[in-house]
Structure formats: C-alpha cells, structure tokens
Image 1: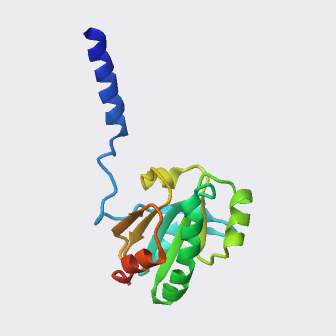
Image 2: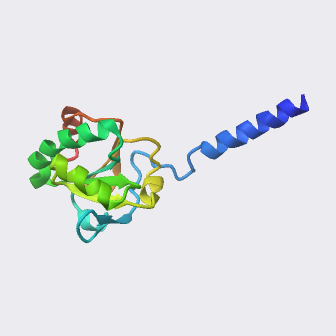
Image 3: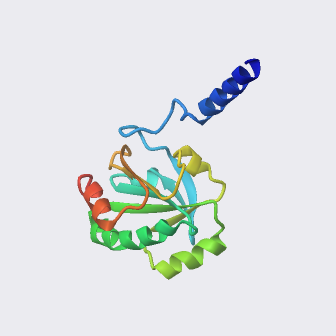
Length: 163
C-alpha cells in the first residue's frame, strides 16, 4: 500500500506541474509584450508597434497540417480588413528561417511572419498545440482565443466585433 501511495503522490505532483501558472492568460487580461524577428526584416515589438490596431497573434509550424490551410484562408480576410486596423502576426514556433521562408513564399501570405526560434513567446502565451490564435483588441487586451484551425468565416466573425 505504501508503494501505491508514493506513486499516487508522484502522479499528483506531475499533474500539478502541468497546471497553468497563476498568471495564466485569460480573456480580459493584457496581452504579454514581446520582441521577435520578422522573417525577412527588422524585429517586431508587440504591442508598441501595433497601438490602436486589432491584432491576431497566430502560432504555427510548417509540419502542422491545418496551419497551412488556415494561413491560406486568413489571407483574404487580412487583405479585406487591414485598412480598418487588422494586423496578423504569424508566429512560427521553433523553426529556422531556411524552413519557414519557402513555406511562406509558397502560400503567398502578406501578413507579418515572426520567428520564435527559442519558443519563449510560445511558452509566454502558454501554447500547448498548434494552431492557436489570440485576438487582441486596440487597447492590448486579449478578447478571444481560437484553438485549432479557424475558417475564414470564423476568423472574420471573431475580429469584426473588435474592428
């Protein structure tokens, strides 16, 4: 019985370690600030460079099957609403520019692609699976989160209320 209790205690400790920290990101909380390199140019400082814009922060990788279709589906939505203040920051997770560049070029996307080479921002945003999109209002507050692939219709519906 003592072995069973010890194993149970270890299992509970392991589960507790998996619990989100008390600073878990919540709808209505401020979006964490970060600086990441763009794929082909100067670094991006969020939220400083996106004041008064609605920002969708997407986390993705080229090995994620639904990331490809979602990135393609969001491009026309971005083009339709960018003049109304929509910005999309597509944060690539842990992949070098040599892999990211041809993938992005093939998709023909025009929104910002950022490189999270060390996974720091991915951890900061508590991303556990891909794709994930955080929707940030013009004041830098998290107003929504889309877990999994978003269609153009779902994405449009979510951002329209923020624009």
